Structure formats: C-alpha cells, structure tokens
Length: 372
Image 1 (cartoon, rainbow, N blue to C red):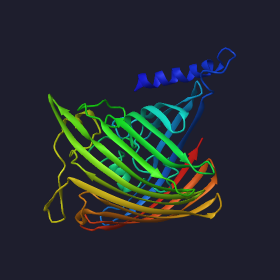
Image 2: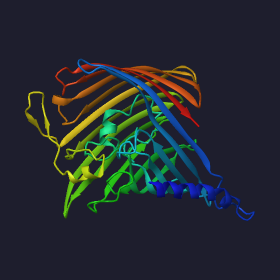
Image 3: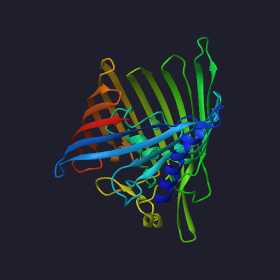
Image 4: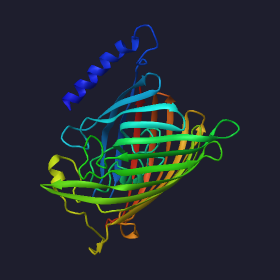
C-alpha cells in the first residue's frame, strides 16, 4: 500500500508539469482534485442488543482529468476504520482510463464500478439513504454474499459502453454497457482464470425515465494449496427509474444463483477457508443457500427546492430467496442541503428480520456529508 501511495503522489506532482506541455495543446489537462467525507450517528433499539455510536463512515479523495483530450482518467482512494482488514483498510477504489471520443462507443480499462444495477454507480451521498439497498449491497459487490472482501461494487476489467439512437431533440434513447472482469473484487488478481461477463441496457422513452435490465455470468474463487474452489454466479436485475432534479423514483429487483463461502475475506488467512456457507431457519432446519433475491423501491421528493427533501424506501433482501430468513426495512426521513458542499441526512428505519427470534427493531440515523 505504501508503494502504491508513493506512486500516486509522484504522478500528482508530475501532472501539472506535463499539463504545461510545449505551448501547444496540453497532453494532460489540468487535473481536478475532489472528494467527500461522511460522519454519522446511529442508534439501534433492539431487545437485548441496544447500541448507539458516532462513526466516521469514510473519507475519499480523487484526482481526474484528460489525456490528449479523448482519454478520461480517475484515481480515487478511500480511508475508513483501521488498517487490519480488507474491508476497512485504506485502499484504492478507482483507477481507470476511458477513451471517450465516440458517444456510442467508449472503452474503459482499469478498476471501476461493475455495470450492474442503477444504484451501484451512484455516489454514496447521492443515493440518499443511510446505506445502499440490501439487494445492491449483497448482490453487486459491496458486502457480497459470496464472501468477497468489501469492494464498493467494483472490480478490475475492461468495459464498452455507449448511447445512441437520438430523437428529434438530440436526446439518446438507448444505452448499453458490457464488461469483462476478474470476478475477485478490488485490488485482487484473478484466481480461477475465469472472467465475469457483466452488462446491461436500458431505454429512455421520455426525458428522465430509464427502463433497463442487467445480467451477470461469472464466478468467485479461492485457492487452498493446489486446489482451486470456484463458485459459479448467475445474476440478473430489472430496473426502473424516473429522475428530474431532486425528484427520484427508483425500483430494482435482483436475483442471484450461486453459493458463497462461509467466511468473509477480511484478512489473507480467510481465503484459505473454502467451506460453503450454510443456512437454516429459526427452528434449525437446513435451507438451500444456492439462491438469493431482493427488491427495493424508493422515493426522494423535494419539499423546498434545492434544500429540503423527504424520502421513503422499502428494502427487502432474502438470503435464500424464501421467506424463512427475509429481512425487510421500512425507511423514512429528511435530507437538508445547506449548499452543494454540505448536507445532513436523517432517517428512521423499522426492520423486520425473520432470521431473528425477535424479528422487529428500530434504527435512528443521522449523517453529515461534506464535499470538497
């Protein structure tokens, strides 16, 4: 990690020099520095398990710009928690270059968001709630059910995407994106030499409306000595969104077929555990863990233009695609934007988790987000 950070610092120091060039058009555009920080307070009211805590959720810093006009690059790092685990350690989340000369064909190479679901590519502040929805978190590579380390919905690979079929007003009606990825998450090489194929497409029949579908065929693997254990993953999503300014209406259904490992990858020794995760109901009866699914539906509605937003979300995740361990969140709240750089988000969440002996509990959440 130290070597990576030193390399990045060296590149940052060199970019302004390269941008000056020889008086002609610059090879490098002037780099743009940006980032954000999120701090929160969360209180959970649960029989036998009340808790409350302040937390620095994460801090990110990024640099982006252009090379030769047509190539867009971005490098983004994240700091949160300690340095002991893959999930909390300071780490690079983005480093990619994308050729953007043609609207209908853009080519991206590096580490970046998987092209799966509408919510996955969204900034953590802009998605509006105390966390990404359960289906996206568990089935798009955040806290993935396979046991993969926390990867912020990202992987390493190559992607093609584009927009085409303009209408009379010049607005594109169709979008596609498809990529080939390692399948192991961020900052990790491929293990089983199989690649994930992930893609999606949507239509935009009216301004602000997107109707789309996504697919994912791949695997997640671990190696124990000379043995490689590869778990095949088959996923799809159906998505709809209407967005105009601060008004957001969005729903997505995600389905997954494929087992996961029992131990989540937090440290190197965890990758030596190739046992398959098992599930059971509250009575201890085994439940097949080969399938999972989930759905969410949300609305964020402006109350005071550019300032105050009201929000509500229904969020369901079923780890075994059955009702025996379904977890439902019912969320309401308000977001207030002091300016484009400062926003506070508040939320009340009622949870019904059928996997627990006492399934009902509540959470109160307050978050302050700063952009820079």
